[in-house]
Image (tube, rainbow, N blue to C red; front, side):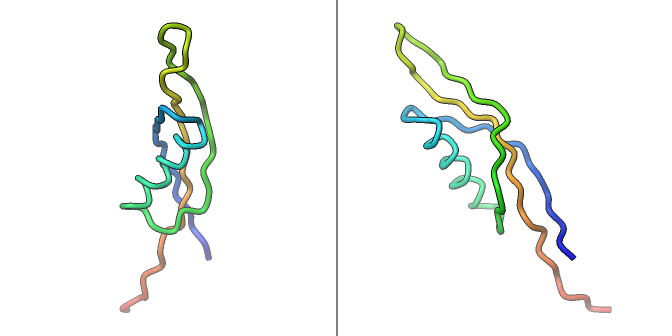
Length: 72
């Protein structure tokens, strides 16, 4: 049986939306194992002097819950 958990994470980048998503995956993988997928819930940018200053992504990260062997 497979059980998955979903957490919501905000990420940002000064380069691109793709880089913002990669930053989410990179940071989440430091404490979350077995990431299966990332669902992009929302994207936005901040603008300064008519130029994009920062790309922001609100994402849901889906990962497997690791099975521990039963000791019973």
